[in-house]
Image (cartoon, rainbow, N blue to C red):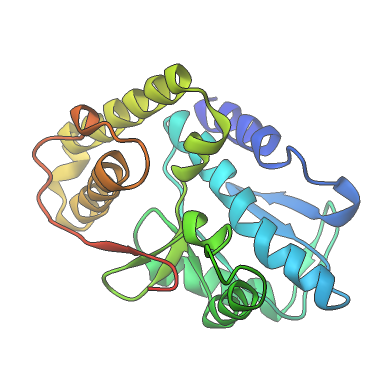
Length: 225
């Protein structure tokens, strides 16, 4: 029931300001597959810009609903409608999602290069949306800066409430029996490190809302790294 409610809320949050005619969304088991068709340079720019934005909304809504998630963004041949999704692009995304390990939405190498090209061409002075919406992990993975959407879509009071809720969720995970398993603890520590980075460096400016006792120190840098 919690998963269904969180996924429903995430769907509604992720699709705001996105034309249904420009995206196909398919749900299967506990997975969500979103695809934006690309026909020319303009639609490619739109897809590369919008997909991280949508992914951030989806993942933030799931997290605030108490559901951790991970994912990947790829580009290539793909067929999608509201019932079906198949093709090399989703195969690559599924592979990358499994390899990324941590609760983050990773970008494929090709999408990273497209974002770099678009950023250099259109956003030379300030980096554009990618400077805010993407981060580079210390392992070299470019991923979606999910909590950034709280800066852009919430007022100060709501942002504080959401960051506090996210902290409580992370703390509960760290204190859970599952955290005794090293492979799971590693994921929870990563999430805590990312939460703390957002609180101190990512725009929240609320060091009082950090999670204490994180077992790792992890560094994140702005895109393109």
